[in-house]
Image (cartoon, rainbow, N blue to C red):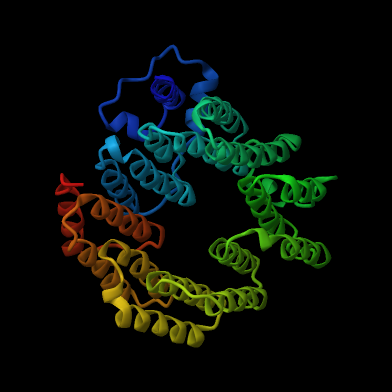
Length: 413
């Protein structure tokens, strides 16, 4: 009874938290917003604009969210919310803040709170202080309710870790009066604040796993903030190397990939290649399921290409594809898209769009051999999301295929 009551409160809170905002709520049959809304709320909604991207990317995001939302909440609330949240992440990555808010309105578990904290972080990083404050307050409320039913505590901890990250960005923005001034926000206050690294060290040493992992992610962001200062960058890198032993190998590979991306964002291909090589050592030095090996190799190939080693990337990607083809029969059909979508994304980086489309189509074909709609919906969400993020426009045949497949999702799940 307790859990059922708390779940009802959570759903009501989430609905209240995002009501009245977002494009989706206006285009999905939602009620019109009350004209008596305060001026501050109106200003907040006005700040949540969508950055200019191609129309097909917006449609792919909508299609991805439609596929994720096709999953029935009972009994698939976890899978449904997880898939929906990945589309919200993609929206924010593409600067579609208003669209993301509309999607958040339809997530009905703790991931809505996490999404609101991510939206607040996006607003803070882009200098929209009032919007960031509003959604941080909502995320805090959701975290409190989630904490009441979260016996292990990790869900609420995930939300609060993102809240802390958003508050840090908001503090930097507010300290300098940066409401809407993105250029100044990006170049101001990059240096670590007094005690910041000591606080992170303390969390890594004494905190629970998710808290320690969150602190390492904050160190990875700090690596980007101080990248131009070689001495500070090496100090942060040293802290990371001392502490990342707490991470499972897969998360360590993800962290090092993030560091490679940061080096690329700062124009340092040499540093990026060094991180990719470290990832490669972990990939080679461990036994993996064939689908995991394929995707790790493909992601390493994509990063290697971005770092300027196109020849090495092609060799790595060929090895990834060969591994998949040799061990395909050992991979369950529901896991084949896990391997194939990263291969498609790597071909995008190599500007081989024909091959990319081939592997996107193959991912759909492989999972469609399974009669259940849950893995189909999840694959459709991932394919549409990936194509939107990478700017790959489906041809008319693939558009029709994607649309018809989304519309065909039904029991059995």
